[in-house]
Length: 173
Image (cartoon, rainbow, N blue to C red; front, side, top):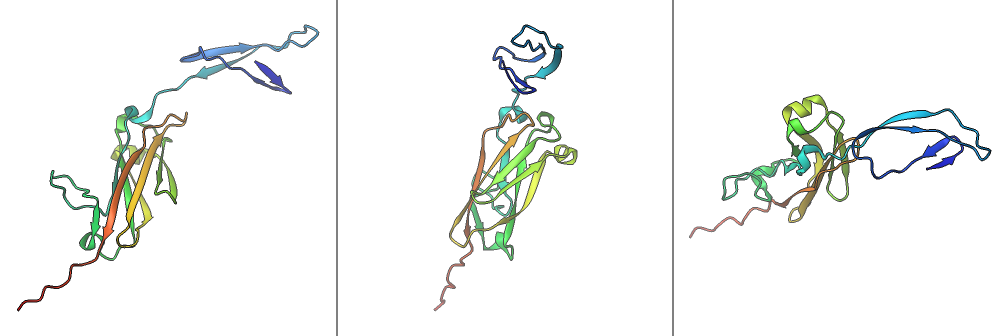
């Protein structure tokens, strides 16, 4: 342990759960200060059971060959007149808490969303306002769920190429 002014720091890697620590400062002359206690809780439980959140780029709605949505391409019909999209992160609502955060990023922009009870009840967070790439480019996004102790899930990823160029009109002869 060390003392700096009125601050005391103590490192003990053997603590593994909830413990009460008691400290007393003794000066160089051997005078004992008043003992003080502090309850310490070691939280190393990752939210969502340690599993990455489900992450989707919401305009990417076409169906894959396996019957799932999110084929990795935002086409002309999916885009319509949109200039932005939303991202949706899903999680196990029994394994998260109010105040946990989901950090979304596209490599340039980052949004941090704190979970509310309504989001937990829904089992998802929808984050709006993500700019679409230019035609022919691919949007790459990530999401990480973390609790207030800093325990974080693995990074979830999704990507979708914007392809809104229509094929040429065929000539019928």
